[in-house]
Image 1: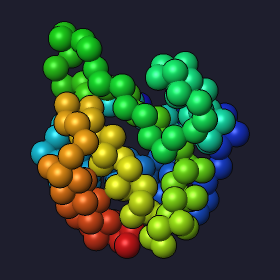
Image 2: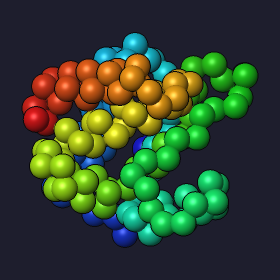
Image 3: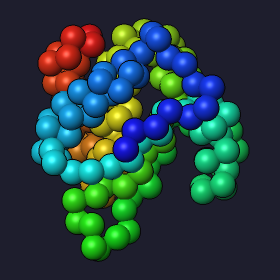
Length: 141
């Protein structure tokens, strides 16, 4: 399920239901995770800061949070993601990247965490490949 936190509005990002569905499908396909279920909340900095504090004990906002599934009865369920659309905009501007491509990169990173990968060269390579593949497929670059 994909949800939008109250008060979040993102006309400049691929954040409508059809756009985010297509982006997530393209990323899951590129990561060989197609057919897997997940929950995604699109949030602002305030909402993600609250989640970051509550679940990780860290102050302030972050760009994406991943909560891997812990339910052996649902093997196709990856878990939950929370993505700050404020962070997507801010970081895309700072890095000089198209916002849609940066959003793809953050979601790919989150999906890889849900699949059990940790930070490192393999995760970085898979993230970049999936984000670029999805961006080209959907015209986000």
